[in-house]
Length: 492
Image 1 (cartoon, one colour):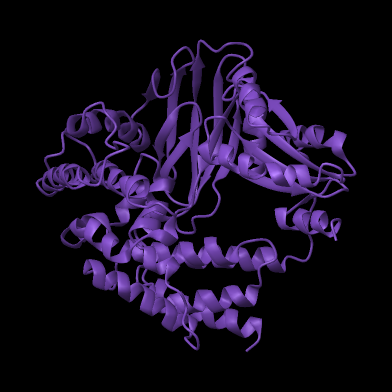
Image 2 (cartoon, rainbow, N blue to C red):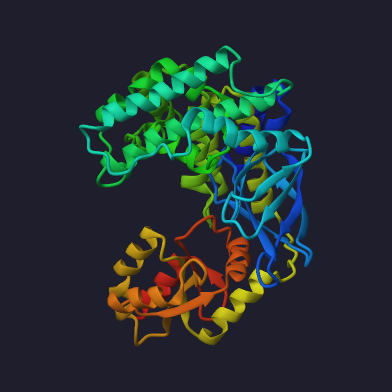
């Protein structure tokens, strides 16, 4: 069957599923407006604001947008959203933004992070963001729920307390007893209720990651995973088969990723058997998780995990084969019963096909991020470049640099350079240089201003370091694999 026939088949199959109209407006894509003013703005700071948006249906790299801030501190921009969701406003916090809504805020530049933020007006988005700190404090107090470093003998009692918190929230949602003012809409209650449930569940998942695994995802013991998550079976209606969990305010992208990694583990990591069809492979993988937790066939989070696996892990890298994507996509369709998930999966697949089959590509104008990056790499033209974005606060970044020392030494006499770029505000030069010297980290070390980092983050969609890319000897951005191939060919 040729590619066109496969695509036609897929669209016909998904059209059948998505024929049930999605009436929930806030699951649809659209735009919203973010506007406001920075109070007490220093002349040389807060000149741009970065906004980070993520699509949980595909778990792709986050989209980073920048908003210019005028001299008087005012700013405004239309924000494209795949659906209503919590966005991350860098140097402020996560905040909820509904499709079609306007969110207006003021931020006092003299105060750090979420302090000094006031939401203006009476829109749905403003109401949710105003209410969130109060309702969170009512249930959880001021402290973070996650306690790192718990020993395995203490974790069961700690987890019991987290489950008790979730049960209290569930009881209050069911009894319409959330501490909210009269007139709070049903949708606002749903967002706040889901956000409350996500915090203890996220803490439980994070503690599994920090304290129960030693060798990454592949070291997870499935029997142990099932025992650790034993509380999910009787609460799946609220925690796993609840579309409102897409609206959670605190760190939504990480939350959805963790559900896929530490709950729906089998969806992505059950190995395909010899002779097994792709569809049978996914059916078997989902069945394993369903048996473990007693899930129903229409479980929402499991369907999200399936879509994320197909779009993120397998097929959206540069050079991926559309026919392979068609094979994977066709295989998951029979397992997608939620019209919400089906519609978003179909929309993303259509975008991918259009991007791959576009015959004429218009050159986009150079952005500020382009200009900054070209300035950084210009002195190294003629060399192949490994370019790493990192920060002293980032443990994986430091580990990656330590592991790369031998590689840097290997190519020191070749036309290959290792460029390490960091934000001078987050990684001040004095302690950074000391760590580099103490650990014999060679290479070219570039410090950029906090604002330049934001522009580079927008260019490369850097949600958080570490992030790496490559540049060939002619100055073109390429994959790390292409730089590897070029570099190691010189050693033959």
